[in-house]
Image (tube, rainbow, N blue to C red; front, side, top):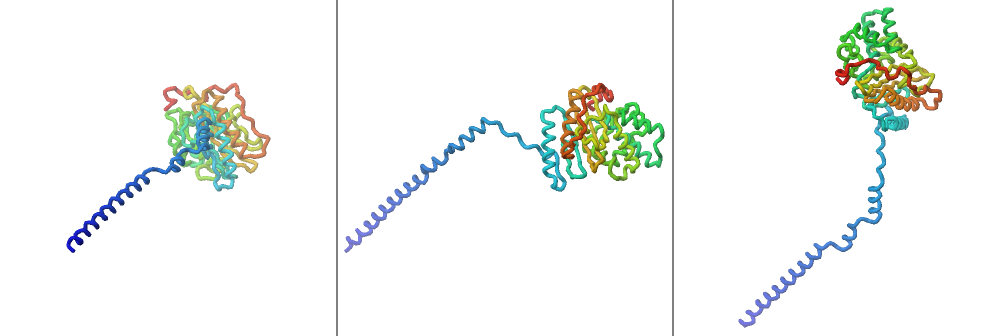
Length: 345
């Protein structure tokens, strides 16, 4: 009896040992199988032939140009297509031009506005003469005085013929305090008056020039109605050789109130043009400022290329338009001579 009971535990122990060995073998087999990726997975990791072909084509074919940024926008979205068309047109007009440009435009009828580097600074050249005129009119308005006969002559020569001597006389007469007062009232906070008598080195932006044009047209507390009408009348009577720029492409039956400026600064040219367009149920503003132009004609062409797009798209269907100006004999003669040491201040 003792010997039989002694053998049974040994048999159980042997069976248990065999079971353990079998379990370990199975576990190792499963581990190896799991660690080896299936053949199907290896085939799936290879790129399909279509993907290879597309990748090869993308390396060989040039990338399509990005869509132009939204230079123009519609206030309500109602004229979003018009704004997009104007954005594309302006971008195309500036494509390849070496001019450094800042521009702005606003149309009351459609609510479309355009902005391209509107806070970039430029030397004003003669467009500052509209600021001088505005400051004079504001000063006289505040003192309840009318323009004197001499002031009428000087302002007329300064705006319609861009007389530098008249501008200097009025710059000195109005004085920096009243000039700055006018800028403050018009909220032209990014405009910096030129130092000393160098009014042509006033630093301006397209944004601030748009504010100036709005002061000349819309009812406001800065200038009364007679003052605004007087300023616009002078800008509408600028001589033919100086009516280039933002007038290009404008309807012939719309009144263009314009002022331009041109200046070698000291070698490359500043070419600026600002305009307010009224009549025939139209009321819109365009400002195009440029610098680093190789010559005056090049800068005028840059401005007029942009202006033609804006005027055309804001006046669809109009065929009787103002043609871009061809060079006049006076082009290339500096509007104002600035010492080279001051021109880049």
